[in-house]
Image (tube, rainbow, N blue to C red; front, side, top):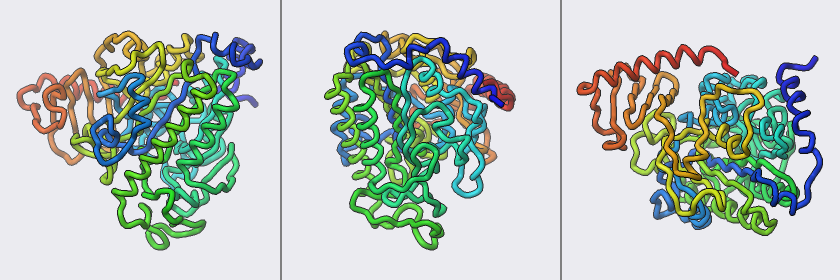
Length: 447
Ligand SMILES: [Ca+2]
């Protein structure tokens, strides 16, 4: 029996049969549709790159690349932790609508995942003629039905849990976790390098046709391990008894910096491959993080860290490069979220969604190509009992400790230091009302 999802995708195929014949390189250059490379760092904080102010981590390749395009000052992850942001990114909806309100845990959530009926951005691009590959961290479910190859990706190499030992590729509960397509397949090498190696190979093989390359790196999520660290985890090992979850090295801060520098090296290698293949001018590269930094990293002076709904938990580094379309050395100050990438990518290729007319995200294509403003909207972050809602520069925070809601004006107070709720009760009430409406609406799946 064919599921609703498969019927939808099979019907869509008839409109794009030409996608299945491969054009040669010169044909691709004439094609208006650019390749899309989406790089997602894991737990990289707002202060962890040179272009966002760090002095002790060297990211020359990321810096140089970002100068060819636009750097975002007000880009946010949908979640304050990994899985929710990834669900929002791939679905274009608030993660709560697709079943991912929190982290998919290595212990206890072995059969949980993103609703496999979701039509992902990879499905959409595939229907519009793109070849799709994903290398790196999935974190949206363990069972085969949740595997990337069943959610729009032609190719997948990587891991499905939240983090693996960078050398032995064992998750934090002692399970082997390195896949090729939907089968476990051991592989030697440092995780960051393997992701880069697969990405480079993918570009090399597919430079003659439109491609979507999703690269969710593990860096700089724990375990804090660089190329020279020893493997800590082995199959069947017990966390905290047989190995420290965050890595056995002595200096996590120093290793963290090295890990980001290896990621930077990988991004340099990717750009080199795109240039050598002559497709850099016809490729949009988008880079962001999936949530704020953990305690080892830097949130750039913002309040809070990963797992909080303060700015430090979700305002993240991001930039985009698309030669000839996005002005170089530009800056975008619009308030954007991860779920906006889905409609933005469709807008960039001039296509409508094959299914959705009601995505939560909105396209910001014209903000980065024409400097257009995005209409103010209510934006929500929820993590367990904590939540925040923003409209324009006003942000209401409920920190989950039973206290009163707090209100901040981010334009004047980006560090969320001065609670102005008592002077602005009209705004407090308005935002609380909108939050309640949203909470009721996400109980119902829209897709
Ligand atoms: Ca993360």
